[in-house]
Image 1 (tube, rainbow, N blue to C red):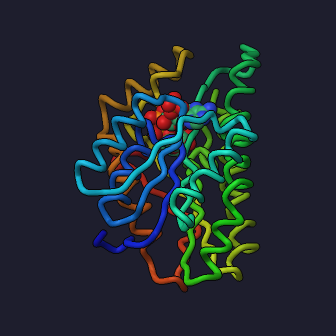
Image 2: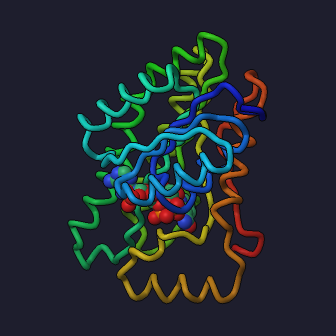
Length: 252
Ligand code: NDP
């Protein structure tokens, strides 16, 4: 394949919709072979077919990333299939705002399980491959999808924001730890992006806030974030964008 990412292999979690799907398409269009991970098999298979019809190379694994043993199995299969992993886009995530007094414990756990434990399962399963790629010729990239929620204050988003603060802070530390091994680590922090993320919100106050925002400003498209990720991973090996904040122009 031709392109700035020719020869590289990218794993993308949460590839069945939104930012992950758009990122898979852009990275494949730039020449990377892509491994698509998420739970919905039909969506992943359709994306794999679309990428292949466009001339790219893709394979799909339907997996729940909160299942550590399953993620380890998939990592072994990806390595067997492609022989290397140079880029990991750790993107699967969920946002379930609700006032803390509502005590929606199952929502707290869902967000912590996926945004923290799921993210760590994926990092655990693929870091050895990234280090191997970084040592061989590099660069290798670990891209974690955080959010502006990691630093901005949004009432009722405390648990989500806490998980994303974890993602950003973890990324900064891992960058320091893995940089000497040729592995770049980047935290991507988007403002509002129009995806399925908002469809899971059941707190009316947050739904109203999101609706109001959508009617007033033009939200980012998933492709906008995908382009930023593609730019980040195509930089020369010596350059590591540590944190990338990408906002809708009109979002305060
Ligand atoms: P989507 O809901 O469109 O995408 C989430 C993806 O995660 C889906 O592909 C979903 O697929 C996958 N996923 C969910 N649960 C699991 C699981 N247990 N195992 C594997 N995959 C899973 O939302 P976005 O594209 O917006 O979200 C992507 C990331 O971007 C998230 O981390 C989110 O926090 C972050 N983000 C989003 C912003 C926005 O405004 N949209 C702003 C800032 C950050 P499936 O259901 O098939 O498993």
